[in-house]
Length: 156
Ligand code: SME
Image (tube, rainbow, N blue to C red; front, side):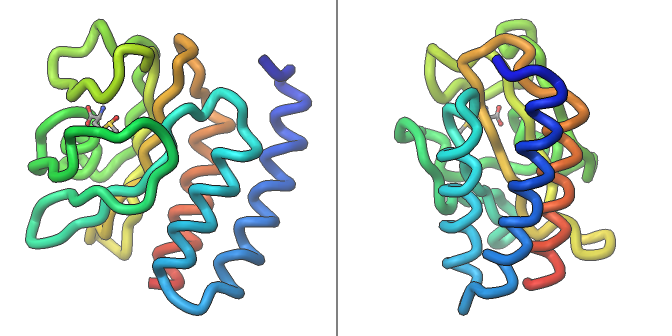
């Protein structure tokens, strides 16, 4: 794992790269694809990195890098993703085996972070990251992903 200092430096760099990538992207599809690639390539403990976007009041799987998942559509309130969309706030789960309302994608997954993409009070979708490392996500991950979520909402 990286030290806190290494993580802060890397995340500042990735935030700047995300801003350029999102500004330059010709359409939203390129935004989602570019962000998933940027995060997955540069952060070793991001083992499943993807987007769920709201379509007809459900979360629908979008671009992702990682193992294929059965959860291509998720109801609001269902699983960590559905709860984050319902509460309109970031969820960090240190140990997914301790969660009752959780949808398993892979046996290797140990922890998860879900960050809603908000336009005002409306949820447009979310960034979902799984890690094989227990307690992988902290305030730095939340800061980076919430910043990227805001850039995406501004472009939407
Ligand atoms: N674990 C999520 C489902 C999506 S997968 O992680 C790709 C959840 O509980 O909502």
